[in-house]
Image (cartoon, rainbow, N blue to C red; front, side, top):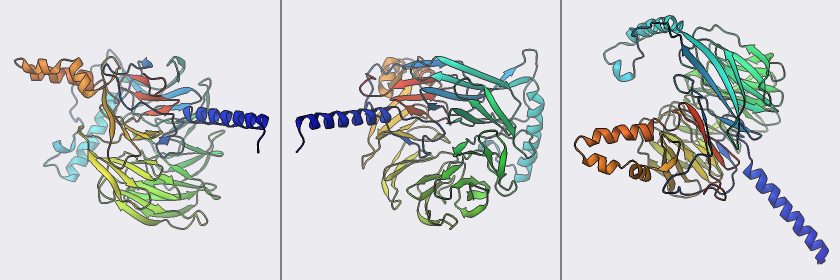
Length: 496
């Protein structure tokens, strides 16, 4: 039996341990693309399950960081109480007279009637024209560091850069007090996370014209890995190239690598032709190749399972068995889920489930066998590339607005479907319609057009940056917008 003194000491120890555990949960970081372990999930304290009628004011907003075609689609990351965001920006020379483009980009519906050869010839002319027009702009790369609690700028690092066909969009990776990011023209850089000082930069081999990349570094032990044409492994201390994959076979531009942490660590990457490859981290020896049908998504490793996600439903979401005692053994397929597909969205793994978004479909799938727990259709337009993220027992999707739903439920149970208005307020869709008096406006002559214009301004263009995913830490959700970064406090004990 415990004495009172021993009982009191034990109680204090348990209380202290719970407090420390609570603090570690609350302050879990999001230091890289797809969160702490690249499953898209991070631990979190209890979060709000509804928004006030008047909406949730942002805790802070950082203005003036361009995104989209003017700054890229890099996602924010969070480490040690700081937020890091990368942008590849262009500034037009005021004296330049560009005139209309003769060869604009053609979406698929504008290519009707063109043969494959005709479209390829058109693309050559378009690239040539774009390079000529690019001379009228100045290109820079910008890495900003913000305080997570206040949004105040800690440092702002800007480097002169160059034109790429689309803007560079790699998400930074924070490891051991350093920031690793893939810049334009296949240039890898490492910065001091505290000061923003450039520690090293390393041009990566292969010819470069106007290619762009959205791959993000993975850092494990002494190695930093990124896909930039082939996969490259660099010494994280000085940037020296340790090994690289085969350029002609293993080309990739947007998918990011993941490290399978076994006794013999393995780098897993998606490559062109729908292939997924495993390389021995120590020397780059190729161990196996899977014809997984992948797109631009990032592979996921969870419970000795490899998950890949394709750009067509033919491949869909696929699970493979990994063999930790024999990492060189080719993974074997366990199951496929073919009810969703996306060109670049990466799923989320939480406990025993996988959450996957593709087209307008959203589903919860069992990790064990691939069976569908639930599936729903989202009422949004043309979602692509943006990935789900999960914090605690909630999953978030930031496309046009912000959808939050229950990760534990056996049915789709949304907590709120919100928009970010032009003032940065996170507000429910119905409450925003009331705030804008849209019902009254629609009832007026020619009011439908005016109402739609107000909705586009206050609910669509002011929303999250397409193709960028939010980051979460310390009860805060950080979202990148087209010209700003905004933070919302979602901790249920603090937000309301």
